Length: 618
Image (cartoon, rainbow, N blue to C red; front, top):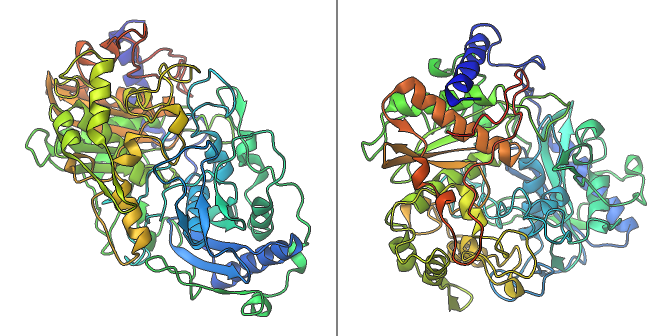
């Protein structure tokens, strides 16, 4: 199918939708959550049920509860809970965050964040689900398989983010996490009247780790979390074990049966003080218990967007405490994109999303829901929009994606990286410049990351995996990764080393409030390593970047890449994707016989069209 014919077919479908289907799709429209929230009584019940199960398991647990946008509602520490927990990636790695010891309350929040931020009305994921899709192979333990589809996602929502909010900023989300996302089982989403309202996180041992065996069948921390979620459990039909990626069924829990009867759990008043007590984690809260915020209300920070540019597309916006859109479409701070161009890129991406078949949502045939962001060449967020039930994690992760594509496509990337020397509070420095040298050797080009080659986030992920080519056992690590003998999800290479000082410092001193993770303004909230982010060009000139996320990684590629292409066809101002000859998939790494990937769209992506291979040739 020619590019011209393909564009005409898609444009016709989009026009028909805008005229008559209100941005919805053949499944009757997008899933839109209703305002629901956890009350103080709900949180008390959840904690009491979890404590009863921990006692039945003869465990001393620490339990955390958050709402959907990350407000910490309660932290309860049982008597006898371990005073310190050790980070252990299960791969015998040394370095990074491996071996760091922190109080257990620092770990229950990331577990809960993971479950809440990766779930929706159409899918319910747990911290176990996350662990399955971020490791060096997918499935974990399946040799010679590429890295998980969300490889590297653990380092978003960081305490140094300039996008996610600190806990003290009222109820407005999204909030930062002490340690990004968790891959350790024990984090489960919470639902009320069928709506996602938050999550519970539990830790009861001395290790914060990852499940490297998808065939195991019991985890006591997960049992405690399951008991806590009784009455607020995810609907069975949307749980991760009802969803497949690349032909592999995801995991929801592997916990077995609770020993207690949650319906018989004693009231919270009976266990508070006798079985343990509430605690306040500085900078996050937890004592006293507070009610959750209803997602979709102004207090949550995520509301419908009245911008007429997005009429009929079910667009939502992220607002501040005064109700103002934090990231409306605006002209680039560098003068290289107009507000109208930014708005059109966002609109075109939303239009593609409104027809894209979801990979991770139930029921089958649901439309993907994503967040879309545009940044300028300074890394400033000049536009962010989302769909109503899109995953909350993407509010921070999508700007991170766009910035990653922007930064590594910039001629100044190599110099900026070489100048960055994080002073790690644990007593060493991070050799950022060595990653640049290794990449230049791989490409046999001393000007790599200084010569204007366009990199997508998928391309950067290719060279950040512990095997190159990705997933092939016995090969050397990618230049942005640690060697496999030292690699783990807590010591993965450039992604962590860029931010490790700003991640560790607030853990050692919770009074610190950072708002820049790297000291490099183009990547202020760090980088990410999976698909969905692309640089924006006007001819051969880099002018910004666009990204999408919230569904399958290929769907994210499709929405950002095709959305940008379609916007260019409408604008006729020269805006569009990188010229093919400049893209990273034209590089031939030294001695490898393989190329990087730039874009990977689903073969038949739309729910209302039989069009195939719609990204080919663009």
